Amino acid sequence: MLEQQLIDSLDFANRNQEVQGEIALSSMPRLWDVLADSNDCVESSREKISYVLRGFHDKNGRPMLEIEVEGSCQLRCQRCLEAIIYPLKMTSQLHLVDRCDWDEFSCEKEDADSIPANNQLDVIALLEDEILLNLPFAPMHVAGTCRSVMEGYLVEKEDQVKENPFAVLSGMKKR
Image: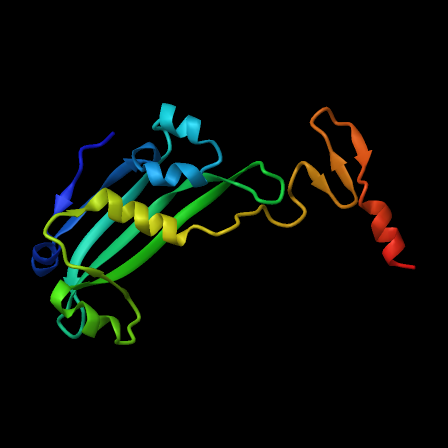
């Protein structure tokens, strides 16, 4: 597990600072539930993502954070339940809002999301949040490319083909 990296988010944005690096998926435990094989993730730290976190001010002078993440992870296809390699390439911008201004700021219509300014912002937790928010709800292979499912038939692992019991119903539907 990596050492927790904390920043003062407002100071980070005011100084236009930047941090970058690589992080193993195994150091993000909330991500384990959506990965194809979380046991491999715990045992191995081979799968890594690279990230860049920048602080800056928008055109109105408000402090912001920009997060860029690049890499890949293996998710479970919801059609065939096999692993699918999902590329992670995203950029998020977040306004930093003082807690006392939160209600006023949250009512404004903005292009970027907002988070409360924090003098102990956990960078790894922020990255994990952004990754989770950007993953698909039901990842699937491209239609027709799943290995274990074909239309009208179910292919078992021993290459035995059984007729799908519901194929009979589709014939009745046409009557």
